[in-house]
Length: 263
Image 1 (cartoon, one colour):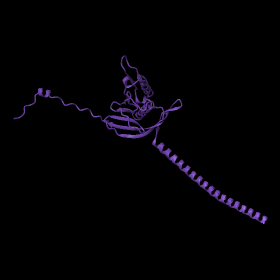
Image 2: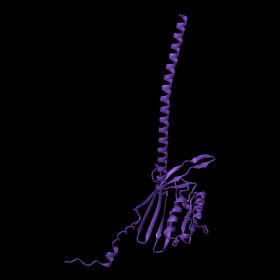
Image 3: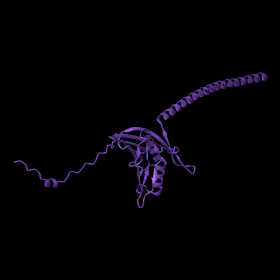
Image 4: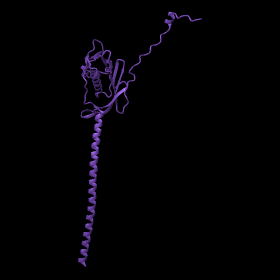
């Protein structure tokens, strides 16, 4: 006997299967480049407040359908990677011809006040301007809760203003402001070069070769000077021996002359 067809009431009584969370297409982005930067020392009252540090910048780039992501991540030399900090990325929507920077509102950089945030943002802007200068820029939501203090909010606003964003003040009781820019071409790619310098591999190799050449020249000069010193020491030893022999001979002659006179 065949089963009776399922009624609409029975089908409605069955719980629906939970929907699976959408997969992040950029969960495993590939590394496209690596380079080093120099965090220059910070002086206060003619004393070193923060010493010089080296940091490695990892560049991630990936594309899925009409979306493309470009991310920069910083890790200090000799220290583990700080989770949820020291990174910033830009999402490019080729379908709508628009770019979105994130996470600028909750941007955390360690160590703080070393210019890392402005450097990373400038690098992202420069990358976007090389390829997608005519794309629009999505507004950035700036929530007061993302900044721990008023000073942090001022630093964030100053960072975005220098990059060419217009900061709007919150309306009424709202705690959300916006950072807006019309097109990518209107943004400004700049950072404080007195705080951060880029160490290019080609320049480092050239400096190493120059230093190696200087070391070889100095080693050759030292070897030549050492040979001269050894030659002078050898001559000095021979001269000392000859002078000693002459002194002994003169004393012997004096004694012989004295003996002849006395005898």
